[in-house]
Length: 551
Image 1 (cartoon, helix red, strand yellow):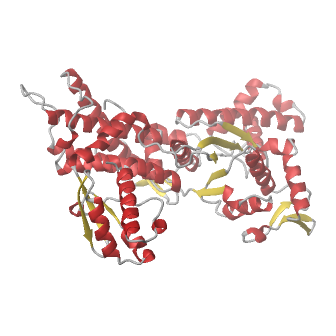
Image 2 (cartoon, rainbow, N blue to C red):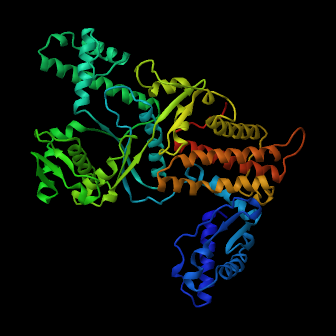
C-alpha cells in the first residue's frame, strides 16, 4: 500500500462515514494529505483530515476521526488506525501491504516517480540566457544546473517542456564586447567600460586569424567584423560549456531577431492600439501601474529607440504565439523588478498575467581553505563554470548547486566537495547507489535473484519499514518539486534515502555468509535493495547527476 493508495482509502472511508450519517461528503478535499509522522512511534503515516473537515460537516474532530479510524481499520492493508490529540489519525500498515511499495518500484522501474499532474501543460522554460560577452559565471552555472533539473522534473509530471536560451545579441553590452575585442587585437588595454580577461585576447586573435585584414577595415566594417565573428565564437564556447555540463537547450532565441523581424515594432503598435501606451516627455510609456507594477515603464525612449522592455514584450508575445500556456523565466538576483514588469506586460497585451512566472536566483560564492575564491584563471574578474567544474567535476557541481532553494545565497566549499566521505552530500548519495549496485552484482554471482512471488511481508524490522516508507515518498517529492519549482527537494530527499538505506544496511544482513543458504528473507531484502537502487538512479537522473555503479 503506497501513500497514494492509503489516501484514496481514507477518502473513500470518509465518504462512507459521512454518507452513513446523512452528511454531505462534498466538504472533503479532492486529495487527502497523508504524511509520515515526525515521531515514528506515532505510526507509519498520519492525516489531519478530521481537523480539516469535521466542523464543516457538523461533527467534532475527534468524533469524526474515531469513526474514520474504525472504517479504515477494516481494510486488510491497515494493521491499526488510532486517534491522537485533537483529531489526528495515525496508521500502521500491515507488513505485506507496506512491502507492496517495493513491488511497485520494481514494476515501474525508470518510470517510478513520474506522474501526470502537469499533463496538457505546454511550458517554456527560459534559463541561463547569459550575455554572449564572456564565459558563464557562477550565477549562470547555478541556473544551468537548477534549470535543467527543473525541466526534467516538470517533464516527469507530464508537461511538454521547451528549454530555451534567450541570446542577448543586441544592445550596449555587445558594443562594449566588440570594442574590447578590437582593443585586444590592437594590443591596447580594455576600454574603461569593457571586458577583460584572457578569453578576450583569445577571441580577438581568432577573429584576426579568420579575417587577417579586419583591423584595416573602415571603422563601421571593422566593428561589424569583430561583432559577427566574435559573438559567434563566444556563443559557440558558451554552448560547448553548457553541453559538457550536461545542459542542452531546445531553442536558442536571438534577441536581435525580434528587432530585425519587426516583432518589437509590431508589439509597440499593438499596445498603442489597445491604449496601454501613452506619450509623455517625447517617450512612449506602458501603463504598467494599471497592471500591478510599481511604476510606468518607458517602452520607446525619447530618442526613438526601444527600451529593453520593448524586446521583453515582443519576446513574451512570441512565446504565447508559439502556444505556451506557462512561461517560466529564471533570472538573476538583480532582476526582482522583472516580476511585476513581465506580468504587467502580459496583462497589457491582453493575456492572463499568470502565464508569466519568474524565479529569482541568489548569489553563489566559492570557498576554499576557509577563504573566498574570487579570481578566475580565464575570465579574470569572475569565477566561471569551467573553474567550478575543473575544481570538483560536473556531478558535484550540479548536485551542490541544485540542493539549495534558489532564493537563498550559497557558499560552495570546494574542499568539502573533494572529500570521499559522508560529509560530501553528492558522494554520500552516489556511494549509496554504488553500494547497492555492488550488492546486486554479488547476488548475481551467487545466482540469487528475487522472483515475482517474493514474500515482502517478511520485512518487519523498523529499519526495513523506514526504508520502504522513504522509498514510497518519492512520487510525492517529485510532484511537489514540480508544483513548487523546487528541484532541491529531490536532492534533499535522496540524502534522506541514503540515510535510511545505511541504517537498514547496518542491521539487516542481505546476502548469506559462508556456506549459509539463501532464505525467503534474503530474497525479500534483495528486492528492497533493488527498489532503493532504482529510486536513487531515478532521483539522480532528475538532477542530471550520474548514478555510478562503482566508486
